Image 1 (cartoon, rainbow, N blue to C red):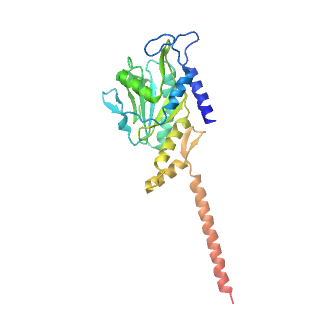
Image 2: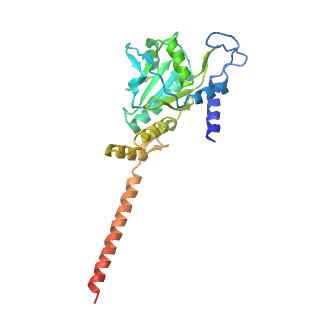
Image 3: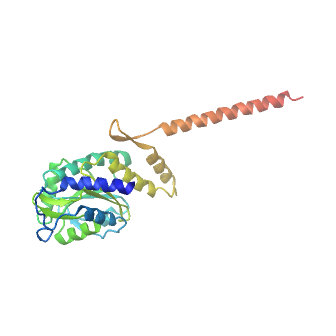
Length: 275
């Protein structure tokens, strides 16, 4: 059932990016007639899960070099966009922005990073990436909008399993956000342009919980409890710390204490009344 849901979600995402009927998409090299194959794109995307990313280098608007290794020890969400996109890339960025804010509130500001990479290497330079971020109203710590040369873009997209093709309206591509774990390994592909808050937060929660699974310190125990008790509140479309576990635990401990006190008192009465 999981595979079926993934396939349906990916097909829906690809439908959003499909070219108009009768259009003739071309491949990266400009060969006419090579259509964007949805099944192949999904297969390539899923095949990327488990790969270790190379230490790619990017440039942000200030000219600073950013590398994949800069995020070592933290999960990172990698989202590919092209800045001349008029609709679906901005929709994805806005949905990510909403989900990232919720994730930061739930998991902590420094618990993960986001890397938005321009894959149209001819046009997506650092200045345009900064302009794109400003247009979307995104200015958050640990969210980087970066550019790279064509060779880096092609190598990165191949490793991510992200397929794109030039098309009359811009590019055909999978609506894909890639989650990379703290060791630089692709952990999951998240599909959709209009992503929901749980689609973004739950995979991050699972990665964070896995890091605390060893329970080797008090901090690990506290982190595991915090993650366990941080639950999605659909009424507010956000994650809240649920105190019901501790309330239930307190009531249970109080009940056990009262029962133990009662039994002890009865036992003492029994001893006193013995002949």
